[in-house]
Length: 275
Ligand SMILES: [Zn+2]
Ligand SMILES: [Zn+2]
Image 1 (cartoon, rainbow, N blue to C red):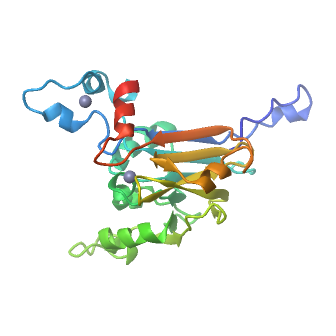
Image 2: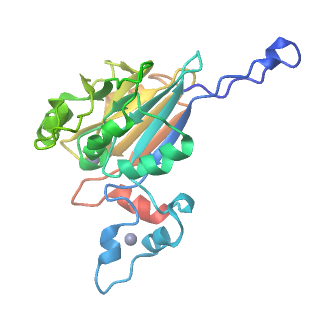
Image 3: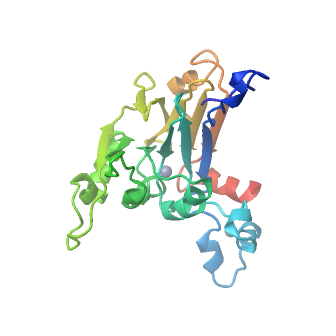
């Protein structure tokens, strides 16, 4: 990412040229799959909600650190010419609410690229809402939105969203328009970077429970950011890629830890203990 531009020199004509706004990261959600407060905790008969879920209802969501939606990051990438591109990592079950809360607040008009970490519901079930954030070109026509995903995730998306892959309205809804999507297959390989909206991303495969791989990403031109969600165990190549001896010193590590489903969900515990 590009940090805030340097302070312009005092005096002279340079002071009259406003610096371009910087790039930034917007955390659309930092919660677990079910989000917080946990609905199971709230509706369980005979047992009062836990302290965290009670606090999750005690204040309006925009003032409440215990009201947390599905894990997702929006990168507001400012190009050298001052143009902003919005790159979304994961579009889960709570995406509509994330648009209502954060797109409106930060005046984000659309999404230019989407990257998927894996195919679980809290990472992909908002795909049905892509049409809401579809970008437009200079003639105000809808543009295709590229979605980057592995072949494994694509196979799952084909089964769950056939109308998005075939680019046609759902049966019985001929008047509706399907989102225009350009599906782009990426590799689970740190040596196979790709570019989304002009920004390079290095895939960082990690274990999301044994036998299931999820992708994190390394990105940033002037500052190096590693984003890793749903991590149960690091793979040696990824560990090397984000180490000093690999890609060099990271400026920011964003890590959501996880554990084997069915045993214990560390992200769930973190949600409940630390916020
Ligand atoms: Zn609870
Ligand atoms: Zn998952």
